[in-house]
Length: 343
Image (tube, rainbow, N blue to C red; front, side, top):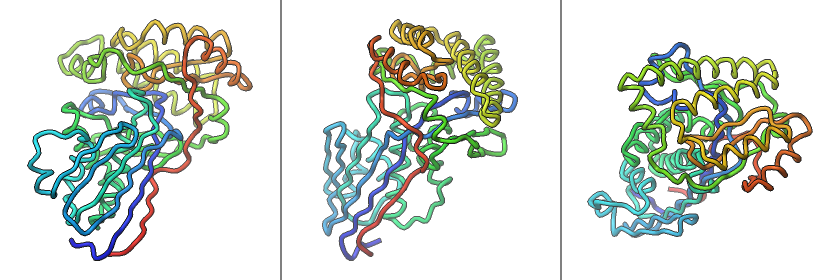
């Protein structure tokens, strides 16, 4: 492929907050449980990718939020490199193999180690932009498959599927994980209503990188019965969360979130920290009905469901207890792309 004139492609995709069923979405864990499902929503913390082509074969990769840049004389030089400073951008470039030089600039609004799938959202934003640049013609679900597999190459452990869907579609979703494939459905929940009923805080990057889903997955595959039983219950809770949100039963949703958090703590006690425990207690006294860490835990973000009218009080209490409250709302739309120039 040859670009005849300069072209600029910009894409933008939201991060996510998981409400129930996380970790079950890692293959093959969901095949061992009854009716596995995850429930999550897109949040207006965005990742973006900006590609500007030029007439030389040089490839420049740059991350605004990380303050990092690397340059390759050509695609061949990029493919020959042994290591990358920006592996997400470099590995996706390797896969799509554009036939032109370009500068790619990425940005993420997700705090470090937040657990709100900033890397997965960036994978979707970047893969979507490269799909357009190379005129590959992949549909969104195929882009998800590519992004998930390339991310596994980057982090060197299996990745879950749920993290990509909020970036793809936005809104509030249930993701069913079946032997025949993955099915995403939009849940009939008003974004405005959910906005008034959740608080998202950042507690700082995880202090122990070993606390992650991979440790749980290894224990599950190794046949640890306690972990298997806990995930049986987590799968059941996720289905109940789906039903509660469908019925707009927020009391049940808060109770289910509390229950799910208790089972996650049993899987890996280090998923929590003294600060997180303190925040959960403080928030409950201020009007929170349920809380859980986002992603693998050990730090990062915590999401709270709150009573109607209690959002400001809960937010204030959490700030006073040492949390960084994020200005967050449901992101109604998934990845969006703009193109300037022509080939």
